[in-house]
Length: 229
Image (spheres, rainbow, N blue to C red):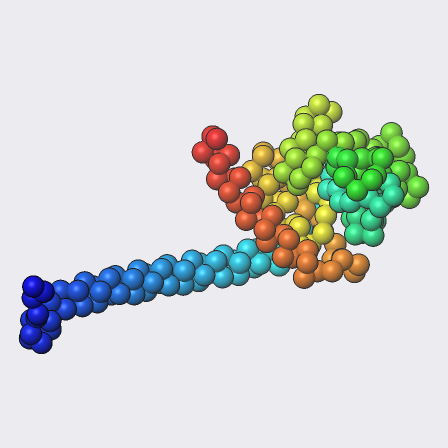
């Protein structure tokens, strides 16, 4: 015969199940609160980091150019059909101006092969442009391997060492100047100087956002380099 529970017994039997269900819900809510707090902290740190990096990007090095240095280093950018892009031409035009002012008598053009259909390396395209602008070809040293700003400067330093060149002016854009100077100091260039130009042709919101990511990557790379990794 089936035993019938009176109402009081049914009420008592439900209490443990209700308490278990309530405890499970509380644990889920507690987990969600902690997750939200963690995400909020990460978000605030992320925003703070972006503001900090943008401050560094916008704070272009304001350095007094010396009367003369051993070499100018032009940091590469993309070619278009083997011709320097408008943005790269701005850097090269600044190099031509500095060369004409006697700031340096030798130029390193640094940049490897683009994966955009170009047959020339960035260095070769830059050399051709500078020659057309009046700089003798025998005054131009090619660095045709680099695929990043770090490599631009590292490989250019190797060329400087090979040719007994010590002092330098790094030629680039303003938004790129702070990271370039930081890299140059980290790899051991002697008292590097940055001469930068403000772009009139680049879409700056894109390039400044891209520079934020690149600077973040560089900060991690620098930390690993200092740790000997």
